[in-house]
Structure formats: C-alpha cells, structure tokens
Length: 162
Image (cartoon, rainbow, N blue to C red; front, top):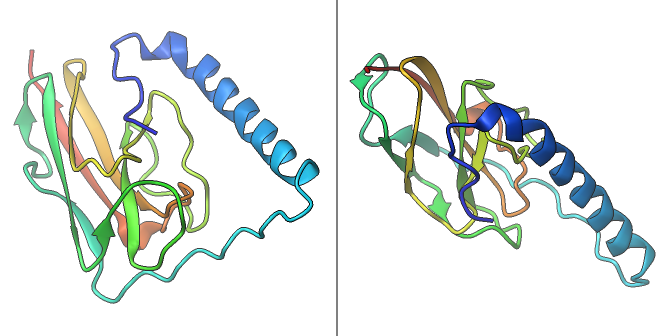
C-alpha cells in the first residue's frame, strides 16, 4: 500500500474509501479461506522489542507550521520495512490525522483519509492541512497493518497557520 489520499476534500471520500476498504478486506478474507485448502493461519502479532519507539523526527508538539506540511517519521530499536510478511522487530508507519491517539494492539489500521498507510517503508511524507489545530498520530504496525498499540505510537498537535 502507498500513502493514502491526502487531498483537501477528505470528507467526501472518507465514507466511500472506508466502505471500499472494508468490502475489499471481507472479500480477501472470504477468498483466501474458501478457495484454498492449504490456507496458512494468521501469525500472532510480534512482541514490541525492548526500547522500541516511534517519533516525529522534524516536528515538535505545539509547533506552528504551514501547509503543505513535511512529516518525517523515525523509529528506535525496531526496523522499518514494507508491508507483507509478519516478522518480529519489523513494521511500517501509519499517520493518523485528527483521529485516535493509538489503536489497540492487534487492531487492523483502517484505510481512509484520516489513516494514511506507508506500506512501502516510507519514512517521510507531505500532507495538506487546513488552517487550525490538528492532532497527528504516528502508529507503527506489523506487515499485515495490525497496530502495535500505544507502545509504538506518538501523538503531537500542530497549529497550521494561514
């Protein structure tokens, strides 16, 4: 998956994108279990490595910024890689815009205009934000986009100036 829609008209697309993502997930689940006799079980969520954390590399909580906003994402004691196989000590970033502080460990990260996926291993992006205060959450997840929970999330608020 690449970064999701960053357009300014997110409200019109949120419902359709979320519904489509939900439908695709159900179809994939149905197809993979009903048509394959040798379906492999989903591996458990790996443990969070000791000392692992995610952070905003270039942004501070409460910063005044302009749009478009460059967001650099960093990790410590865990490796960034592409989505795909579930491997201990590896995952990828998700950026939540004006959404949750984190998702419970093992929860699939939604794919919509408020939950951007970086499944190609990206560590930076540019987002367009309307003027005003916005909450940004980094959420790290495994190869299947399952959240590592609050242990691997970071939340800041930024004030976008006109």
